[in-house]
Picture: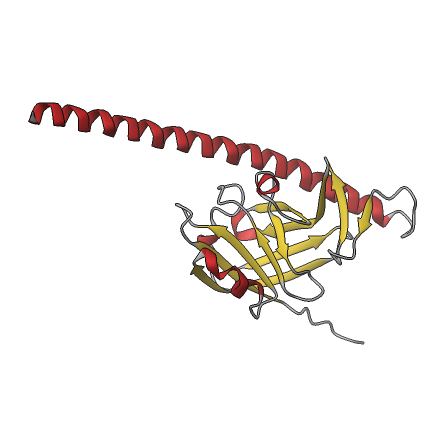
Length: 207
């Protein structure tokens, strides 16, 4: 009887190990696809910004829009609306940011969950792919984070606070006192990792 139980435990353990390896392989493949897509879209956004700088503001050929709901200028690429791209120098990341979110969009790129740059309350969410927000927990206080909108305007932030919160804290994150928040799932998905950022005001000397 003990031998049978031991054999059953070994078989169950083998299946669990195989399942874990399959999940790891799947997640790595998803992360690699997301990385390739992000690199391509950021390049297209930069091209769009460069083109817009050489065109009149009201040019009828400009492939972009500004919606009342977003209050931010958007550029459509491959059927998705983007509001700019996020740069995290300490992690060597440049990531496009979609105007709105759903689970399908999150597989492609980080998304805006709520807020905007002007009102200084923007929340960005992304999967914990290593190519997206998977290393947010390695950010340190005062690390630099930049957001470049589709007009080429760069807003600079510094990491002010990091936190781990339950999924039920979404409303608290949205209504919090911050200029920018970056959110992703912790591994296992039971909690959320949040990085709160403050805008850095660039001082200029007047002559």
